[in-house]
Image (cartoon, rainbow, N blue to C red; front, side, top):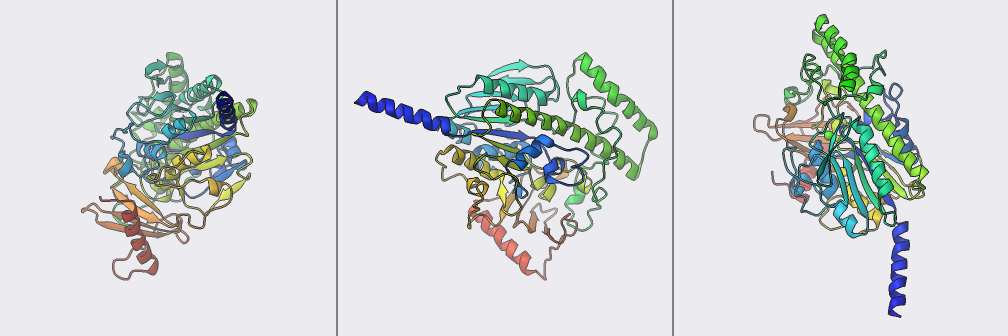
Length: 490
Ligand SMILES: [Ca+2]
């Protein structure tokens, strides 16, 4: 009898394990929604992303997914823990992630999932909570990456975006097929210094990419903060004389093709000796084309993973999530990089396909969701308990088309890395329309307030010290309330 019961339990467990959905989390670095054609916009036609668009067409696309701290390592720590930076201990890129703390992958392991991370990690400490890890050291390189593979450094030859996909598929092939999986497949691309695959070097060569309307923003409609930036397309993106010192270590064959493409262009630029707006324009074209070329390889590789799911009868029972660690400036406000609470870097892409649970082709314009919600969503999808100390909320009800009435109406943001690219510490709150930003540095001691309905490009701060509008007052109260709720002391 006891044996029978034990057998029955084992059978019940293996059936439910087989039915529990797999989770494929595809995550990029610095991928702006402006460079995903499913989000529309002026780049969609020039640089379509058909494979990324397929996720949106077969699932839900979120237009208001906001990060809590718009920079690489901190965002990754939020995704793993479901906690704001001040609680997960990773506030700035120089920090080291405390891998002994509670994370979603560890809880998924406990729930019977097989877990893996392949690609960019950027949390300094050795990954914990993964049955398998293959991660780049630090920022990694675009060519010939070395991957820390379950504790051992392994060198690979080729283009990193392709290799991360190769290694992800290799793990999927060799996994324990009796268990559901959680795979984080995380690209280095399209992070700087934007080195495209050799096969994409010539693509867009003859195209003039449209300039964003704020390329020549003079920052006059706001506090002093933005004008102190060091992330200008014109002045900070890199001296072209340095650009022939590429960041990757190439093989001699790769170098011949890569350098053969860029060297004549660099020399022509130096000879032309452009000044003022023309110099900015030249840098913008170079930057945006290389960025889009890097995205094209990401899109192709997303297609490879989707095809793997199709070919292996995994598409139906695998939740596919695509996101990036934060958004990015593609020339808006004259910038590259991220960090600010302005929309382009505050917002991050999020598209989710879950066949049979998420209706196809849905666009969510309304709900304020966040990378803070990812950890709880992973656990909820897996049917695993969600700890009380996680600070996000599961997106599952929203994905199923039942947005809860008590879903958050405002979202708190906090950037801590003082001085990185000239961006000061700031925090703030948005309700999706109004946005209040506080720059506490005594040298600035500034506030900004935007109405996105009337000023979607955020060019004119409405903040007033004396005649305070009702909306500004409401958002100031909300900021205080959220800082209390999230136990922010700084
Ligand atoms: Ca990043």
